[in-house]
Amino acid sequence: MVIGVNLQSCKSSKKEDPIPTIPIGGIFSLTENWTTLGENSVYAMQVAQDDINTYLAFKNAPFRIQSAVANTQLNPNEAKKSFDAAVKGGIKFLIGPQSSAELSAVMPLVGSKALLISQSSTAGSLAIEGDGVFRFCPPDHIEGNAIANTIYNNGIKALVTVARNDDGNTGLQTATGTAFTALGGHIDAMTPYGTSVTNFTSIVATLKSKVEAAKTTYGDDKVGVYLASFDEAVALFKAAANEPVLKTVKWFGGDGIVLSAALLADTQAADFAIATSFYAPTFGLPQSLNTKWAPVAARIKRLSNVDPDAFALAVYDIMWTIAYTLEATNGDVSNMETLRTKFVEQAHAHEGITGDITLDDAGDRQSGIFDYWAIKKDGNTYKWYVSGTSSSTN
Image (cartoon, rainbow, N blue to C red):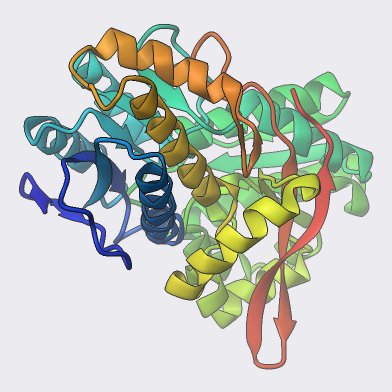
């Protein structure tokens, strides 16, 4: 099934019953940037679709679900086109987009047309009550508090911050800086770089100057760098690797770079990450629910060859919340206000494989823990691994 010009249905490994299907859209970045999450989100939809349709068949429900995905290229304009195409195709539930910049562009279009649920947008500026938009990850102030506490408690007293100029990454830069300052630390925030920047020479030169100044004041082991980015961090790391002083301080990151296949594929960038003890947080998975999320994660990895993070597994939870919503309406999608109300009710009534999915008044996940991911070399290959966990939940 194809919805619009860009949406293509996910293939299911199970034969569909010849009964009506309700489409669920996914608008993800499958090329250009942050594609690791985009691809794993597609496979999470596919795995969830199989499980949900098995459940619906067992319950003798009068409908099944069918997922359809579109590639946004992490581009706000493409995200808007994908949303419009989905709505014109009759889709009432859409998962995504991934970034806050995309979500910011799409939000004015939502209205009463559909329910839009992002698995990974964190910008606090997008927390708006009653807008028909939901987010199944904690907003930036929760992540900022978590990483700031960890950095400060590890002895860093001065932090130079740099970010990609989009809603999500600048939100993380601000949230982390605010929390770090509240702890008594010093923040030197660089002006965010443009979303189309590929040459980081001048940015790294400014970064070098700021790090040198901070080291003079605070000492070599008390200075760090915080980077909120997507896959372009690879190019920035490669440029930074040519400046010895930038290897003498510890580096930290935002969630957009975690599990990046592009970073693992570049030897110079990966070596720089290891040399600077780089780690970054992403929305974490509770070990108490390991028996629930681990089997799903393994099924997704068999399809993508990449470990899915909690953002990707949140897609699985979103799919089930949609399914429970449809079950509550007996498959009736004619009244958007009813769908919104039932969606929130079902989110609050069920625990997901990623944990408590209770939503706050703005429709955002109200709590969460964070796993810290770092890179190590294993033989001739590089791997992401969990180096620690934050206990911050709000």
